[in-house]
Image (cartoon, rainbow, N blue to C red; front, side):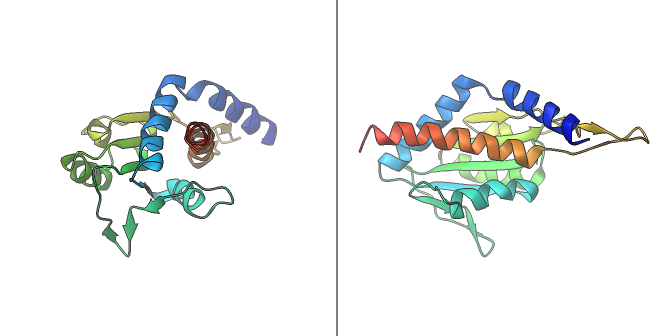
Length: 173
């Protein structure tokens, strides 16, 4: 099972990320970090792993802050940027959050693992990084599948963004 999971995961890692969208997202975040802005991050459910890494990881960027503290959304300014992450692009809570941020004309980068029909919160973002993880990866003897790697791919995507941002920001130091 482990070999199947690893092989499938590596395939997703190699085919998921759009190089141009990643560079656009990194530039968008870098604008805030070299200027007077901050990058706010909110990951829902398993995507909170990215929030934890961005805020508390060994290597973190300066001026990255949680979007919500004690259930209250941070006050955002025009120079700020927001990273929103959720499993589904049709999440009602994320729809309300994205709408509120978009109404303030704050640039948003979205990362989702699945696309489900209906009203998409990602319609309100500037850049959407879609992981396109539709199923768990490993078949079981009963015919089901297990091993849904959304948080792993989200972390991988975050680290790729981190590396791009670090490279851009270093040019301004």
